[in-house]
Length: 476
Image 1 (spheres, helix red, strand yellow):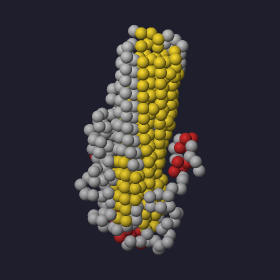
Image 2: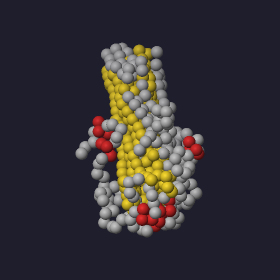
Image 3: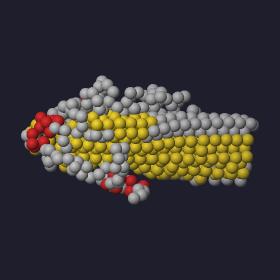
Image 4: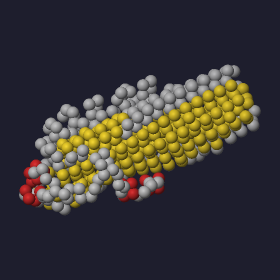
């Protein structure tokens, strides 16, 4: 089946987005994968599963048998202690595992030495309480389901509730190298609005992830954090990961933080603060630690920003944005925010469609503002955006394109704007098609193409204006 934008932005149930067959990192997933072996039940070891009795000992005993564990319908209560001694685990529902202890997970698998190999968890829901530390913004180590130090793990059709859904990878600080390899986690979904994040990928090499998450702050607002967060350390990196995430009412649909390279992502973000956030500038990252060489397709609707920050390098963003307040806000400096590509369409935005001070960006964008009174700039290239290349098509903005930097080479089409193009930098090569006015300052610019509005050359005599102009060219 081919998934169109209509499918991807379908209702909050997420069935359309997540109901696909995906041959993940561990190979094709098959229903009933555990049916080949004799299963045991926690009830064989004294579990009650009523949500009130403490089933920690019975669950741990069942897990330690080394056989597939079949949970019965019900709620198994655990004390939240991490399981560190298992070699592997096969666990299936339908049922729920719940922790009622602050600062613990519904289930945490954290091997004490060698990684666990071949963990399989399917059709189980997990929940944990809202921790006071996390609520104050100082703790993010707890998740409904937390997996540390895993190889060849498969998680499928898992519901999560609490602050954080699934955390997989290095995990809590101070436990040494817990890099994960070859992980498949499909159809992870929120059972109730999450106050924190859906999935945290913290040091995974080769993986496939999909999830549908609805956030909230308990009073109708957005969650504090992310549908998906990539983060890591120099010894716990993310590489060769694929994701498909549907996020609603989250702070960020996806957040790229550090040590994340060569990922492929499809992000559907509805009513989020940012569809995509890229850390780097404010966090004082360097070119080694920021996100690099990632390809992300973004379907954004009714968000504040489609892309915010943009401190990564050498990334590609395919954009389909509608009814967002702002389009792309891409910051850079001498080391970060370089050589990124932005492609696609940004429609019905207010404010600015595309702002950048990133060097050497490549643009292929169509930008359509709400109206000339509601919008500021279609494209604003600020100081620092030297070397920007490509083409933009802008309509219904107060100013179609303003260039305040040097050495830009753009093909611009600007229609239905108050002013089509303002060129305030130097040594730019601009090919213009506009039914609006053009204002030129700076020096050594080459401006060619066709304009039907007034043209005002306010800069140096060194500017070469080769416009096929219907209106006269004025010098100021």
